[in-house]
Image (cartoon, rainbow, N blue to C red; front, side):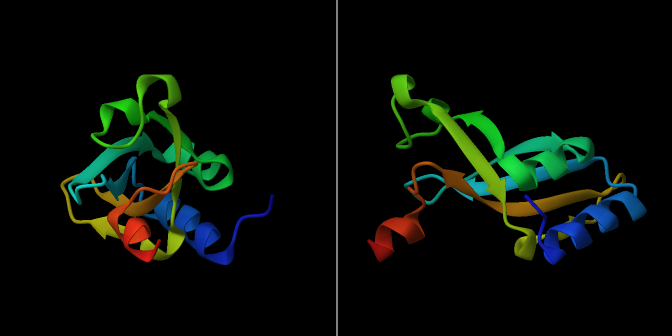
Length: 107
């Protein structure tokens, strides 16, 4: 699958700015901010296939039997965090269950 122009821009920027870590942010069903970090080397794969995480550790997401979740970075939300060693951040859409408060509101 070809990456979008936005995703390609993000990958170039991460490489040019020597960004080492990427934080993927999302909210639980109560609206509390959650995140996990990936390395810059994992970013292209995250755009293409998403990054797996344990949804059972997030309150209200899933039961332990259904806990495998995938977070996909949204390239349009890319931001660089000014830090001694710069970090980048994204909002991430979780799959397969859309349980962010804004998704529930639209249902």
